[in-house]
Picture (cartoon, rainbow, N blue to C red):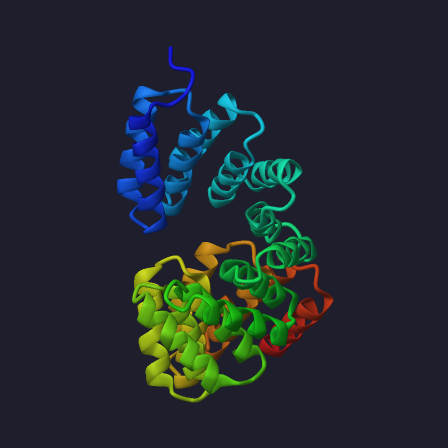
Length: 330
Protein backbone atom coordinates (compact mmCIF):
# COMPACT_ATOMS: atom_id res chain seq x y z
CA UNK A 1 0.00 0.00 0.00
CA UNK A 2 1.30 3.44 -0.93
CA UNK A 3 1.90 5.75 2.03
CA UNK A 4 2.28 8.85 -0.14
CA UNK A 5 1.17 9.82 -3.65
CA UNK A 6 3.59 9.05 -6.47
CA UNK A 7 4.97 11.70 -8.81
CA UNK A 8 2.44 10.60 -11.46
CA UNK A 9 -0.41 11.00 -8.98
CA UNK A 10 0.91 14.40 -7.93
CA UNK A 11 1.01 15.40 -11.58
CA UNK A 12 -2.67 14.51 -12.01
CA UNK A 13 -3.47 16.42 -8.81
CA UNK A 14 -1.56 19.52 -9.93
CA UNK A 15 -3.26 19.39 -13.32
CA UNK A 16 -6.62 19.22 -11.57
CA UNK A 17 -5.75 22.30 -9.54
CA UNK A 18 -4.72 24.17 -12.68
CA UNK A 19 -7.89 23.23 -14.55
CA UNK A 20 -10.04 24.27 -11.56
CA UNK A 21 -8.31 27.67 -11.44
CA UNK A 22 -9.19 28.10 -15.13
CA UNK A 23 -12.82 27.22 -14.45
CA UNK A 24 -12.54 23.98 -16.45
CA UNK A 25 -14.20 21.87 -13.79
CA UNK A 26 -14.92 18.74 -15.86
CA UNK A 27 -11.22 18.51 -16.73
CA UNK A 28 -10.32 19.14 -13.09
CA UNK A 29 -12.63 16.36 -11.93
CA UNK A 30 -11.11 13.98 -14.47
CA UNK A 31 -7.58 14.68 -13.21
CA UNK A 32 -8.49 14.40 -9.53
CA UNK A 33 -10.27 11.13 -10.32
CA UNK A 34 -7.11 9.72 -11.91
CA UNK A 35 -5.14 10.63 -8.79
CA UNK A 36 -7.76 9.01 -6.55
CA UNK A 37 -7.96 5.83 -8.62
CA UNK A 38 -4.34 4.95 -7.89
CA UNK A 39 -4.08 6.60 -4.45
CA UNK A 40 -7.56 6.28 -2.88
CA UNK A 41 -6.49 7.56 0.54
CA UNK A 42 -5.65 11.07 -0.64
CA UNK A 43 -8.01 13.31 1.37
CA UNK A 44 -6.94 16.49 -0.40
CA UNK A 45 -7.78 14.99 -3.80
CA UNK A 46 -11.29 14.16 -2.61
CA UNK A 47 -11.57 17.63 -1.11
CA UNK A 48 -10.53 19.30 -4.36
CA UNK A 49 -12.75 17.11 -6.51
CA UNK A 50 -15.61 17.96 -4.15
CA UNK A 51 -14.84 21.66 -4.65
CA UNK A 52 -15.01 21.19 -8.43
CA UNK A 53 -18.35 19.43 -8.12
CA UNK A 54 -19.55 22.31 -5.92
CA UNK A 55 -18.60 24.81 -8.62
CA UNK A 56 -20.54 22.76 -11.18
CA UNK A 57 -23.63 22.66 -8.97
CA UNK A 58 -23.36 18.89 -8.41
CA UNK A 59 -24.26 19.24 -4.76
CA UNK A 60 -24.61 15.57 -3.85
CA UNK A 61 -21.30 14.65 -5.48
CA UNK A 62 -19.68 17.51 -3.57
CA UNK A 63 -21.12 16.16 -0.32
CA UNK A 64 -19.96 12.63 -1.11
CA UNK A 65 -16.38 13.67 -1.90
CA UNK A 66 -16.00 16.08 1.00
CA UNK A 67 -17.41 13.44 3.36
CA UNK A 68 -14.80 10.99 2.12
CA UNK A 69 -12.11 13.62 2.63
CA UNK A 70 -13.30 14.13 6.23
CA UNK A 71 -13.32 10.37 6.79
CA UNK A 72 -9.67 10.30 5.73
CA UNK A 73 -8.66 13.50 7.53
CA UNK A 74 -10.88 14.81 10.32
CA UNK A 75 -8.97 18.08 10.50
CA UNK A 76 -9.23 19.20 6.86
CA UNK A 77 -11.09 22.55 7.09
CA UNK A 78 -11.74 22.90 3.36
CA UNK A 79 -13.68 19.65 3.27
CA UNK A 80 -16.04 20.96 5.96
CA UNK A 81 -16.80 24.27 4.27
CA UNK A 82 -17.25 22.57 0.89
CA UNK A 83 -19.71 20.10 2.39
CA UNK A 84 -21.33 22.89 4.35
CA UNK A 85 -21.79 24.96 1.22
CA UNK A 86 -23.36 22.00 -0.60
CA UNK A 87 -25.69 21.25 2.32
CA UNK A 88 -26.89 24.87 2.22
CA UNK A 89 -27.58 24.59 -1.51
CA UNK A 90 -29.83 21.54 -1.04
CA UNK A 91 -31.70 23.18 1.85
CA UNK A 92 -30.04 21.36 4.75
CA UNK A 93 -29.11 24.71 6.24
CA UNK A 94 -28.42 23.67 9.83
CA UNK A 95 -26.05 20.89 8.74
CA UNK A 96 -24.33 23.38 6.47
CA UNK A 97 -23.89 25.91 9.26
CA UNK A 98 -22.51 23.20 11.56
CA UNK A 99 -19.94 22.13 8.96
CA UNK A 100 -18.86 25.70 8.32
CA UNK A 101 -18.52 26.30 12.07
CA UNK A 102 -16.20 23.29 12.27
CA UNK A 103 -14.17 24.67 9.35
CA UNK A 104 -13.82 28.00 11.19
CA UNK A 105 -12.69 26.20 14.36
CA UNK A 106 -9.97 24.44 12.37
CA UNK A 107 -8.88 27.54 10.44
CA UNK A 108 -10.27 30.84 11.73
CA UNK A 109 -8.29 32.80 9.14
CA UNK A 110 -9.91 31.30 6.04
CA UNK A 111 -12.63 33.63 4.70
CA UNK A 112 -14.51 30.86 2.88
CA UNK A 113 -15.73 29.27 6.11
CA UNK A 114 -17.24 32.58 7.22
CA UNK A 115 -18.61 33.26 3.73
CA UNK A 116 -20.39 29.90 3.47
CA UNK A 117 -21.71 30.09 7.02
CA UNK A 118 -22.95 33.60 6.25
CA UNK A 119 -24.86 32.20 3.28
CA UNK A 120 -26.44 29.68 5.62
CA UNK A 121 -27.33 32.28 8.23
CA UNK A 122 -29.10 34.25 5.48
CA UNK A 123 -31.91 31.70 5.95
CA UNK A 124 -31.89 32.05 9.73
CA UNK A 125 -30.69 35.50 10.84
CA UNK A 126 -29.66 38.45 8.70
CA UNK A 127 -27.64 39.89 11.58
CA UNK A 128 -25.62 36.69 12.01
CA UNK A 129 -25.14 36.51 8.25
CA UNK A 130 -23.83 40.08 8.17
CA UNK A 131 -21.46 39.37 11.07
CA UNK A 132 -19.92 36.40 9.24
CA UNK A 133 -19.74 38.25 5.94
CA UNK A 134 -18.06 41.20 7.68
CA UNK A 135 -15.38 38.77 8.85
CA UNK A 136 -15.03 37.21 5.40
CA UNK A 137 -14.53 40.68 3.89
CA UNK A 138 -12.09 41.64 6.65
CA UNK A 139 -10.01 38.58 5.76
CA UNK A 140 -10.43 39.04 2.00
CA UNK A 141 -11.41 42.60 1.01
CA UNK A 142 -11.67 41.53 -2.64
CA UNK A 143 -14.26 38.79 -1.97
CA UNK A 144 -16.93 39.82 -4.51
CA UNK A 145 -19.37 37.09 -3.51
CA UNK A 146 -19.24 38.10 0.15
CA UNK A 147 -20.24 41.66 -0.76
CA UNK A 148 -23.07 40.25 -2.88
CA UNK A 149 -24.48 38.06 -0.12
CA UNK A 150 -24.08 40.81 2.50
CA UNK A 151 -25.93 43.14 0.14
CA UNK A 152 -28.76 40.60 0.01
CA UNK A 153 -28.87 40.49 3.81
CA UNK A 154 -29.09 44.28 3.97
CA UNK A 155 -31.85 44.17 1.35
CA UNK A 156 -33.82 41.72 3.52
CA UNK A 157 -33.35 44.07 6.49
CA UNK A 158 -34.67 47.03 4.49
CA UNK A 159 -31.30 48.83 4.59
CA UNK A 160 -31.45 49.74 0.92
CA UNK A 161 -28.51 52.17 0.73
CA UNK A 162 -26.18 49.60 2.30
CA UNK A 163 -27.58 46.93 0.00
CA UNK A 164 -26.87 49.08 -3.05
CA UNK A 165 -23.34 49.86 -1.84
CA UNK A 166 -22.50 46.18 -1.31
CA UNK A 167 -24.10 44.91 -4.50
CA UNK A 168 -22.34 47.64 -6.48
CA UNK A 169 -19.01 46.71 -4.87
CA UNK A 170 -19.63 43.06 -5.78
CA UNK A 171 -20.19 44.05 -9.41
CA UNK A 172 -17.14 46.33 -9.48
CA UNK A 173 -14.86 43.63 -8.07
CA UNK A 174 -15.93 40.94 -10.52
CA UNK A 175 -18.14 42.29 -13.32
CA UNK A 176 -17.52 39.29 -15.57
CA UNK A 177 -18.83 36.76 -13.04
CA UNK A 178 -21.77 38.66 -11.53
CA UNK A 179 -25.02 36.83 -12.13
CA UNK A 180 -28.54 37.98 -12.86
CA UNK A 181 -29.53 37.77 -9.19
CA UNK A 182 -26.97 40.41 -8.18
CA UNK A 183 -28.44 42.94 -10.61
CA UNK A 184 -31.99 41.88 -9.75
CA UNK A 185 -31.39 42.43 -6.03
CA UNK A 186 -29.82 45.82 -6.62
CA UNK A 187 -32.79 46.67 -8.83
CA UNK A 188 -35.14 45.81 -5.96
CA UNK A 189 -33.19 48.11 -3.65
CA UNK A 190 -33.38 50.98 -6.15
CA UNK A 191 -37.11 50.29 -6.60
CA UNK A 192 -37.70 50.43 -2.86
CA UNK A 193 -35.95 53.81 -2.79
CA UNK A 194 -38.29 55.05 -5.55
CA UNK A 195 -35.60 55.17 -8.24
CA UNK A 196 -37.60 53.30 -10.88
CA UNK A 197 -35.37 54.21 -13.83
CA UNK A 198 -32.19 52.84 -12.26
CA UNK A 199 -34.09 49.79 -11.05
CA UNK A 200 -35.28 49.22 -14.61
CA UNK A 201 -31.69 49.34 -15.86
CA UNK A 202 -30.72 46.63 -13.39
CA UNK A 203 -33.67 44.39 -14.29
CA UNK A 204 -32.79 44.85 -17.97
CA UNK A 205 -29.22 43.78 -17.21
CA UNK A 206 -30.42 40.76 -15.23
CA UNK A 207 -32.56 39.64 -18.18
CA UNK A 208 -29.67 40.25 -20.57
CA UNK A 209 -27.55 37.91 -18.45
CA UNK A 210 -30.31 35.30 -18.07
CA UNK A 211 -33.17 35.46 -20.54
CA UNK A 212 -35.04 32.80 -18.53
CA UNK A 213 -34.94 34.66 -15.21
CA UNK A 214 -38.63 34.89 -14.29
CA UNK A 215 -37.98 36.99 -11.18
CA UNK A 216 -36.63 39.93 -13.17
CA UNK A 217 -39.41 39.75 -15.78
CA UNK A 218 -41.89 40.01 -12.90
CA UNK A 219 -40.02 42.91 -11.31
CA UNK A 220 -39.62 44.75 -14.61
CA UNK A 221 -43.29 44.17 -15.34
CA UNK A 222 -44.28 45.64 -12.00
CA UNK A 223 -42.19 48.75 -12.65
CA UNK A 224 -43.88 49.17 -16.04
CA UNK A 225 -47.23 48.90 -14.25
CA UNK A 226 -46.19 51.56 -11.73
CA UNK A 227 -45.09 53.81 -14.61
CA UNK A 228 -48.40 53.29 -16.41
CA UNK A 229 -47.02 51.26 -19.32
CA UNK A 230 -49.59 48.48 -19.09
CA UNK A 231 -48.74 46.80 -22.40
CA UNK A 232 -45.09 46.41 -21.39
CA UNK A 233 -46.18 45.21 -17.96
CA UNK A 234 -48.41 42.50 -19.44
CA UNK A 235 -45.69 41.35 -21.82
CA UNK A 236 -43.18 40.86 -18.98
CA UNK A 237 -45.66 39.28 -16.59
CA UNK A 238 -46.83 36.88 -19.29
CA UNK A 239 -43.18 35.88 -19.78
CA UNK A 240 -42.62 35.41 -16.05
CA UNK A 241 -45.62 33.09 -15.84
CA UNK A 242 -44.59 31.22 -19.00
CA UNK A 243 -41.21 30.55 -17.37
CA UNK A 244 -42.62 29.79 -13.90
CA UNK A 245 -46.27 28.63 -14.13
CA UNK A 246 -46.58 28.54 -10.33
CA UNK A 247 -45.19 32.05 -9.75
CA UNK A 248 -47.87 33.51 -7.48
CA UNK A 249 -46.50 37.06 -7.35
CA UNK A 250 -46.53 37.30 -11.14
CA UNK A 251 -50.22 36.28 -11.17
CA UNK A 252 -50.94 38.89 -8.46
CA UNK A 253 -49.19 41.61 -10.44
CA UNK A 254 -50.88 40.59 -13.71
CA UNK A 255 -54.26 40.60 -11.98
CA UNK A 256 -53.57 44.19 -10.93
CA UNK A 257 -52.79 45.13 -14.54
CA UNK A 258 -55.96 43.45 -15.83
CA UNK A 259 -58.00 45.24 -13.16
CA UNK A 260 -56.48 48.55 -14.20
CA UNK A 261 -57.47 47.76 -17.79
CA UNK A 262 -60.99 46.87 -16.66
CA UNK A 263 -60.61 43.26 -17.77
CA UNK A 264 -61.97 41.73 -14.58
CA UNK A 265 -62.61 38.28 -16.07
CA UNK A 266 -58.88 37.86 -16.69
CA UNK A 267 -58.07 39.37 -13.31
CA UNK A 268 -60.38 36.81 -11.73
CA UNK A 269 -58.66 33.96 -13.57
CA UNK A 270 -55.31 35.12 -12.18
CA UNK A 271 -56.66 35.35 -8.63
CA UNK A 272 -57.98 31.79 -9.07
CA UNK A 273 -54.41 30.71 -9.80
CA UNK A 274 -53.07 32.56 -6.76
CA UNK A 275 -55.62 30.88 -4.47
CA UNK A 276 -54.83 27.51 -6.04
CA UNK A 277 -51.25 28.06 -4.95
CA UNK A 278 -52.07 29.60 -1.55
CA UNK A 279 -55.49 28.29 -0.50
CA UNK A 280 -55.14 29.45 3.12
CA UNK A 281 -54.37 33.12 2.51
CA UNK A 282 -57.13 35.38 3.81
CA UNK A 283 -55.81 38.40 1.94
CA UNK A 284 -56.03 36.66 -1.43
CA UNK A 285 -59.68 35.70 -0.89
CA UNK A 286 -60.39 39.30 0.02
CA UNK A 287 -58.71 40.55 -3.15
CA UNK A 288 -60.62 38.05 -5.31
CA UNK A 289 -63.81 39.11 -3.59
CA UNK A 290 -63.20 42.67 -4.77
CA UNK A 291 -62.89 41.42 -8.35
CA UNK A 292 -66.16 39.45 -8.05
CA UNK A 293 -67.71 42.66 -6.77
CA UNK A 294 -66.52 44.54 -9.86
CA UNK A 295 -68.10 41.82 -12.02
CA UNK A 296 -71.39 42.16 -10.16
CA UNK A 297 -71.16 38.61 -8.83
CA UNK A 298 -72.12 39.61 -5.32
CA UNK A 299 -72.87 36.12 -4.02
CA UNK A 300 -69.39 34.92 -4.94
CA UNK A 301 -67.87 38.10 -3.55
CA UNK A 302 -69.59 37.57 -0.20
CA UNK A 303 -68.36 33.96 -0.09
CA UNK A 304 -64.78 35.16 -0.57
CA UNK A 305 -65.09 37.90 2.03
CA UNK A 306 -66.54 35.38 4.51
CA UNK A 307 -63.69 32.98 3.73
CA UNK A 308 -61.19 35.79 4.33
CA UNK A 309 -62.76 36.49 7.72
CA UNK A 310 -62.64 32.81 8.70
CA UNK A 311 -58.94 32.58 7.84
CA UNK A 312 -57.74 35.93 9.15
CA UNK A 313 -56.47 37.04 12.54
CA UNK A 314 -55.86 40.59 11.24
CA UNK A 315 -58.53 42.91 12.72
CA UNK A 316 -58.06 45.43 9.91
CA UNK A 317 -58.62 42.85 7.18
CA UNK A 318 -61.62 41.40 9.05
CA UNK A 319 -63.13 44.87 9.38
CA UNK A 320 -62.62 45.61 5.68
CA UNK A 321 -64.22 42.30 4.67
CA UNK A 322 -67.18 42.87 7.00
CA UNK A 323 -67.70 46.33 5.53
CA UNK A 324 -67.74 44.89 2.00
CA UNK A 325 -70.28 42.23 3.02
CA UNK A 326 -72.50 44.86 4.69
CA UNK A 327 -72.35 47.03 1.56
CA UNK A 328 -73.29 44.15 -0.74
CA UNK A 329 -76.21 43.01 1.44
CA UNK A 330 -77.89 46.42 1.45
